[in-house]
Length: 107
Image 1 (spheres, one colour):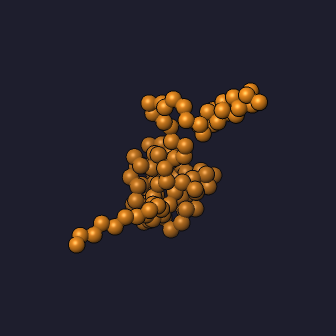
Image 2: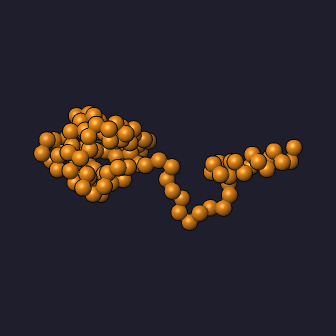
């Protein structure tokens, strides 16, 4: 019985679900979401598969053609294409990033 708990603890530790020693820098589990209609080239490089050249191409395409009307429109950018655009679908937004919003009011 004791052996099974050790195995479960080891499995949880490997999966990162059990508190253990903290590392100096924890790697993010998922890339951050990026607003492709507002992000600059540096922010676009946070997306997997988007380096400096593709990021600049996205910014230039947006400047020439206006904001992206939909996520699939990213495929029209030279160097991106439909496959990469499809992989990025869950990581991009067209407007403000989703999440809780706080209003600061002065009384």
